[in-house]
Length: 367
Image 1 (cartoon, rainbow, N blue to C red):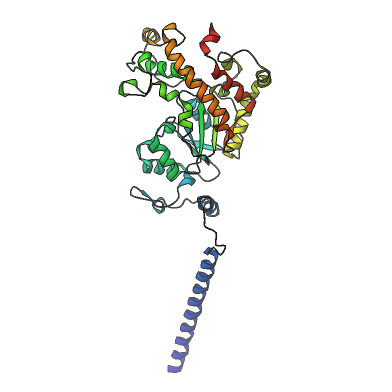
Image 2 (cartoon, one colour):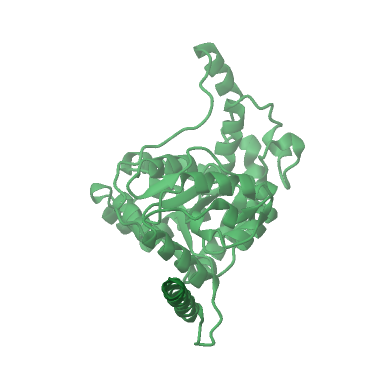
């Protein structure tokens, strides 16, 4: 009986030994697989691709958020949570583009309101919302904050947390931009100073309207040269009827673009390629006018009486300054910004035609 018990104990010990040995072998193989024998240092691109790949392998099971965020500290790479950001500029069709992309549910998820937390060092709440809504690597995640290019803290946080996030930037003629933003503030009930007093830097009573904000080249120059940027001119979002009121006399490139709104189709095709979407972007792109609705016809007429026509003679000095900025920005964009291979524009010939219009005061065309 004792010998039988000893043989049974020996059998159990032997099974434990082989089980333990098997575990050691599996651990050893796993460690070998994790060791990089190439001697090359891993980059942020490697980490990003590894995270996306692991997400796919795990059958769309998201990693735990507390693996990336502890309190207010970000402990690991979170760039996989944000593919693109509409970072500039206000009154360049950013709301139209945001809501259009919002409807591309097979390819994109973008919040339908502005997310400007990076400019206030509130990256953790933004990351928590991005994580909560993240559906998987087959959907591109995006946000919109059309003032991020003007806020150094926001750009620092993009560099720190989202170095691979692609930027989408809209621009327009500075004179038209100033008039549009000023009237937008009036429309929404802001007590605006006379436009002549909004020259130079923005101050508290300017409510974000000042000529310095129209110096687009100054803000664009702050973007890291290795970041991928999609630059567009606001007229590229408009169909032929909308664009005709903004354009000067027709040119050969206009005639090409006007065939079935070809420039809009090319724009969407190029944006699809830039964002690396699995499902192509499709129209139509409806123009959105954000802002409050007038309470009555009387209220609407009162607002109209306070809005400006920047072509009025009293604003000639203001327009001269904005024209100087328009010329400087157009030349810098053409000669410097577009020379960077990481900068993408749709239909370059048409884009350059629109940019050339910045060399002319649009009020001269209306006379």
